[in-house]
Image: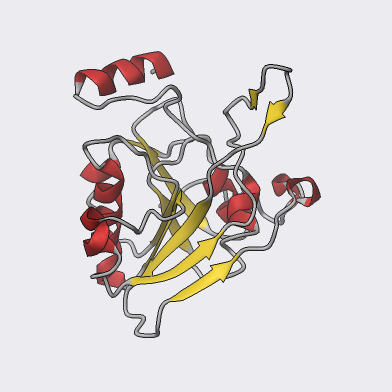
Length: 225
């Protein structure tokens, strides 16, 4: 399905669609800002896998990852809506994603609540990449202020230039950098310690090793069975 057709289907379903239907996450956001701080399970579920930017980093670091996406043109192992996924095989996993945002339907909140429900039986972790101050607002108390599983905020100190979004330019043709700040919000079942706020290092994408050079990277690219 093309991006144009996907937008059309979303629009017909009542979802207002943004100019770009996806914002693909560059590797440094996961590799430098999330993995050094959180110990994840071997199995990872990425419910909005996109081009595999998050998935590929976890694979390179020895995890087995299942990628779900509604769009079959993406790096999917399972094409479906994450909100319809029920984990029929009762596999324990953690969930990591840069979730979609479609207002006023609050699909991002639905993603988070569904992720928390899926990881609860096995005491898992949920990590979501979201805009700074996402935890503010009266509609989000049930997943933050009134949610004991909300444990960590890892604040990015470098703004994200999405992998698939062309940079904006001013009237003189000069590239205008990204303007939004982001945070990894992390929920943990069974963690009774106080919540923490961390600041990620200023990542430099130019210094990253090529993921394909990691041991067993290609062998581990398949999803769990």
